[in-house]
Length: 416
Image 1: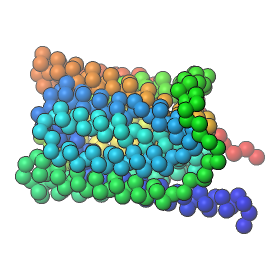
Image 2 (image 1 turned 30 degrees about the vertical axis):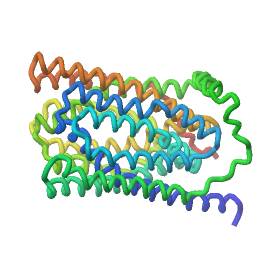
Image 3 (image 1 turned 90 degrees about the vertical axis):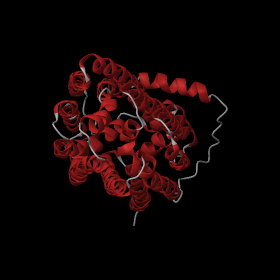
């Protein structure tokens, strides 16, 4: 057995804990994430507070990623950032059981996103470190597949549990939040089983670390493909985030959805995504990333249309099947494209910079949406006011999706 085969076998065995971590972590996230918006609305959140609910989480999650991503590159270590970040997120689920109003929940979620942000660039960079470019689409699809399976099981279980338990709002959420905490701790332990190659160089963190971040930003400005991707995705993210604060309000206040129905909406979408995940991964590594990205973004234009005019929650659940196909294509192509346009030596830093751009754009999109919908519903009433905000999101999403047509293909095919 030659050295190359041994190296490939070692990487395959290293990927197994990544799949395990994806399942366990997504079990925890799936128990609570789909219901956090509904939790805030039931705690009495207004449209503007829902704007802060979305925007504060987005900016907090991405604010420190540039620092963590560069530190991860500098240390040439990923595991400690992923393990500690996941642990921090899991422990902060506990106090959410005791919140008395939406403002307290928003503050806790923002703190959770800020402290847990160290895991995000390190996780994506670790996948890039372990998987060759020609297999990134399939690897991302497989990891997303396992994550989706965990999330699907957890969300359905959580929805059924909350309906069965009943009682006060806090009693309904106690078990899901407790399970999310346990799963987060377990996912951190799993990551510690992965052994990274030792870095013999002294990191020298005191020396020029801040200046290196600015050098990295200057370097990114000389990477046209990366900058173009940030710009195109940023435009789409801004208009996409306009819908986010409105979705929970529509589900709970307009459509009167139960927790089980909200769970089913997520489960149907996740189930279809799982079915198409492998196929989407193969497409990303054969047809290319760009066609999948274009279809994915144009598909998401339908989301605000559906929420603006859907007659009941059951219709949304059916439409969610189509969104599941779109999400499968997106999972296989978005991260693969980002890794393609990020140089290996700056991979963690570029990923963090990209996420920072997405965080800033979605921060302003969600915040503007909250106050805009507050004003529109005050003038035109709840239904019409929400519909106007959704149509603004739809138009902007269409523009952002069209901009994806200007991206160039990054898949490097084998040559004879």
